[in-house]
Length: 317
Image (cartoon, helix red, strand yellow):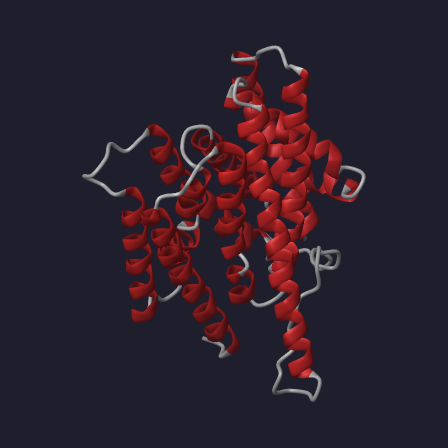
């Protein structure tokens, strides 16, 4: 039987926000500050992950994705070690280390397919389809965690998939391998998020973040060796860029989750803006109107799901 570590949440990155505006006079101010922080951290996280995708396009086109994923997480683990050295030993002694390994494998496969897709389809399209992740997470929570699927959630999920169909335009054009890769990525990341939610019941954020980097580096080592290519100076610039940006992206993402989920989710609208601007400025990618419309439909549905989730938790549902 897995027992919770009493100290597991004392050093979480970001404090939990448990205040209720109706319970004390300062509650509304605390709630407003939590919303601003959640939104702000999510915007920073979105910018970091947008920079990851841009760096892949600019510096890593000629490097195998297996090698890129391995180097990103190996370097990421080394970067995190000075900040999370206490978590290093905990990764190998934790009672949920097996679950950590499963998450690392699932997330690593998701990152591989993500990198594969980023190199092949417009960045705005990548972002739009990745935003289906919370929808898959909601479905997974119903199937594997016993959560209830209410009629409003069903409607939001249906609307989000309508948005995805607007983006993909099935029947009007051949679906590329890059599109298929991103469609596979979204549920993998959703599964990783669900496992992370379970892990937070037993471990702190530092251990969870560090275990992901170590686990993915370990799983991707052999595939990377099998396709290893010489690394140019340009490649090293890209590898360091994605390692720094992704590590900061994960840390700020965890901080954003300390506030209301609907507020954090709303911040994700900025990532679409960042990627549209980067795509136009750097790659001459003018997103199709259907991509923008579909992306906004998906984001609206996902934000609604997050908002309802927050209200249900506040009500004890």
